[in-house]
Image (tube, rainbow, N blue to C red; front, side, top):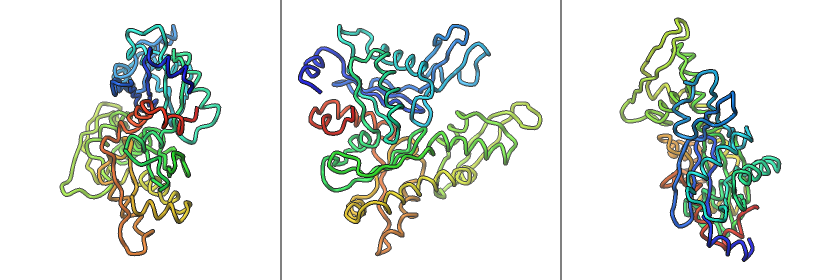
Length: 350
């Protein structure tokens, strides 16, 4: 970034955006997080214009007439619908910058580390067409690591695992760079689908993704809890077609999530097995950091630690931690980078 850009930044709002599959968060320099909305747009199919965006559109999801479509334009962490994404970003920027200055804002966008050049270009073009003066890109694992206060500029390796809505990313970070990364399209949305399939198969009940998400949040766990937990799942009976509500327990949800949880354990195992001996030693000393909404799944940190204990020679479990605010780590980290010019020069990829 040139001195001229820095000078212009004095007269415009600088924004950091976590453009997530499930939620979009925006950080404004010197203000903090000012927006946290679902990444959903309700479109009038006759005119192509948005009727509702964010939280209001989520309430309409699955409840719209044929003339209105509630669309999630992000899939697996990348843009699936360019036009709708542009409209969504425009709406969010206008909402944050209600009284725009003469200069449009500079925008830092968090992106998955494994996306292609074409997907990066789609993000940049969407942001520019939505009104951004300049677009910077930062990889989500790096932003999450900064947001979790990991020493990303040091030589010792840090392993961070970001379990978002569409993707799970494992990255080893050292010297302000990503030394190793792998992206897996198994994350929060996939867990919701697992619960939907399980309830359909075991109870002949069809439930929607947000009902499955609600069950996951209320009673989802990876290890047995001291007290059994239950939740009500509401949907449509597969046989009769009439509305129905059933009670599910935490043991059923654990069974539903087994494959997704195993995939997350495996991606961490691969990161540890494919890295150098020096990085492995660093990670054993520091532990593994979990972030993203999926990190809130009860007992996930304990389960991962137990499953990966075989890599240690003395039988001690590998330490696994959850960041203080896993849902906001990525955008908080991007905001910190936005406030730190030297760090921005080192780690921004565009």
